[in-house]
Image 1 (tube, rainbow, N blue to C red):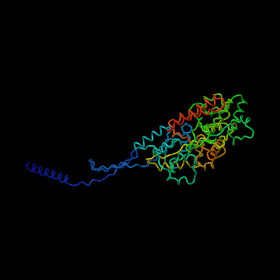
Image 2 (cartoon, rainbow, N blue to C red):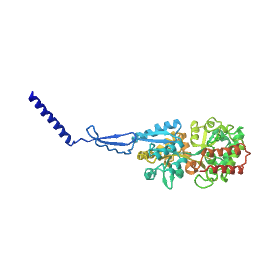
Image 3 (spheres, one colour):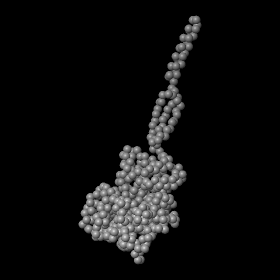
Image 4 (cartoon, rainbow, N blue to C red):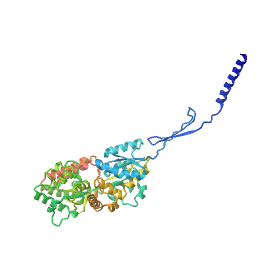
Length: 461
């Protein structure tokens, strides 16, 4: 019994000593590196040991490119256009590059507000924007999009038409690349050809001939057949602007008098043409309820119109044997046209700038330009070489004529950013149409135009 107690005491002392020695020893932990990529594209690196207690933690934030681009767009809002753009245009890009595109439709002001929040919070989630060219200055003046001048080599084999450089570039530096445009064309139901003035040709029509034609149709048919958009704040400002540019009005940004304008000599002469049609009851009887000339033309309620090329394309494609298409009529200064566009810009602060440039390069390839603009309604490619990829179907014919207007005409962009309320600007032109054209006596009241011009000037920023 005594021996047992002595042995137990010795064993206890030995155990205590071993624990103390272990406590004094310096451990050599094995280092394990864990790398975690989180959804915000931040890499977190942790240094830990095999032991339960973490001896050191190092966190590093790194912006890494994603395999998904976020593209916010004002364009292709109709469901059919969205479906084509996603399935027929973006899908091949994704297959070629391995970069997927998250495409969303966002209204103009909403998109600008979204990018503003991202820039102010330094949390950029949109990589590329597809914006209306009248709003390009919103982004360039705020510094929300990056310069594309370093990517000039990607355009070495293609020519971006210069019609939209006034807003796409600032002081020679490019910030936006237009990918789709629209102009104004003449479309006529072939029944109207019986009234075409002697010597006139739809492919080289003048505004004087257009007026004579419209009046002859009204007299011969017993009612007007000319279509404009009479619903307030729609397209009439552009239909009028197209004619005024033909009479010497300067394009926006090129010096007064410039579009939009109500009372200059060029505008007054153009108002006179429209007034002559109105005095002959040359507009369709339901003109004030029309917000788009497509349906009246397809129903044959209207026979003549100078309207948006995509709408012309839609009508023409419905029955190409029933309609004839030409450029917008000309005036003393040539073929004027309001020319809108949508273009791509790379958002400042994106981690995916390289992927964004790949998308821009892809969408400006001439063959892609033709496929995209044909498939989404007959818009106009903005790459000159695209004409070599056009075929002979109805939409190709519309695009070919539109390209002719865009390259040889007198185009003006829409200076939306210069005004407090573009809808209010549109309304002024609608007011003149009703007061002077529909309810007038065929003459133009210059004093009335001057008063309306004063209202226009008050809307400038």
